[in-house]
Length: 504
Image (cartoon, rainbow, N blue to C red; front, side, top):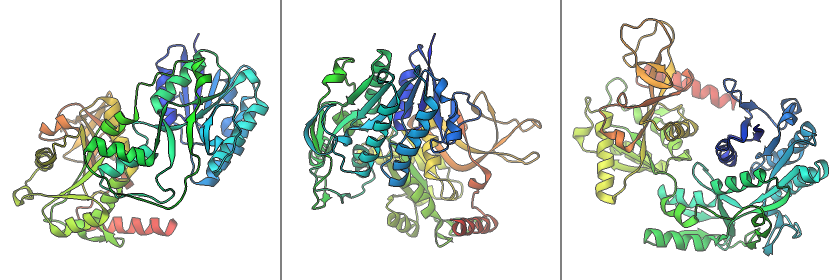
């Protein structure tokens, strides 16, 4: 009989990796929680650790893994999750038959030459102090053989969107100047791929382990050593600015002797591999020409105080999964706005800025130029039209994740259509796939392509449009799907943004 596993924070970076690791084992039935939950998925619960009423019933699971509270900022939330939150969880568990696993951090040791599980705890940050508070509650309230405290080093991997290694790759890919305002480059960390960490945790649980373990690798780098590694990989010098500040929490070596007595320390991933190959290259392509018939100069029109195209530039740069962002335009004013936002610009010829020029022609020009000039070949690309200013960074990332997980060739953002509404791009969703609706179809639920997001594999660039190949829908709310192609739409968007500004 399989054991039930509840992963609190199962949609997060580590939580997602844990879900993959345990779901691959038929001995476990996996449930996850998030603050939003998913009413359509009985394995995805709505749980807010700060609301005791939300947590009732979690003691019925055989194993509860607390992967929440891994936030260093805001500090108040971090402290609340690791004090009030953990208290609520432990009161709800309160069963001798439940194995409780608390995810902690090696930062609890503070600065040290070498640490092991019995080393003194000398926290130097509010985050580390909060983690110690959580550890103390677990030890005092759970039986000795009924809990695991896992002190993890710095994690990295696909889909993280933060962290030191991600910051280095993101800055390099988006050509953002590298600046470290909190240390002089001597900051040193131990690094472990999130999937390797999840594998170790799964093995610890499978083998009935309990107690305190360091979960780390033997890969230990300072920032300056990582920069040198990047320079070696890319064959060029990388300018970096450091502060004259000594770092906190440097540990030269983390002992893994205890965990190696239970599970093998065999890491499938390496820092050098990640920095060299990293996550899949996903190129964001903003398409904006100077000519526009229905709304002249719309891309640079001021929308609630800033050029309309700036909204799309900011959303693209804010994406955690886009590794590079390029604007394609024929217009110098548009190019200037984009550059001021920090977006790379590729000028296109006038013959690719006509009324009848298709988006796919523009895309093939961008991909062709980047391959010819830089031998740059992304594995996927995202088409971002500036006429969708309400499309957020989160929506962009959701589309990329859907493409990667579904194995589809395209992901297209759509909006539910009201009954009786018409559209030349009317679609149906059948077995999770986006299918063009038959013009004669009258009944059923239909969806309109809203133009906010097209995510496509590199191979799909050969298609005349998104309506070829295996296409999946990304649903967006109508209020986020306004397409600004007319003065009326522009006025509506202006009013909405002003209303949001007043309410924020």
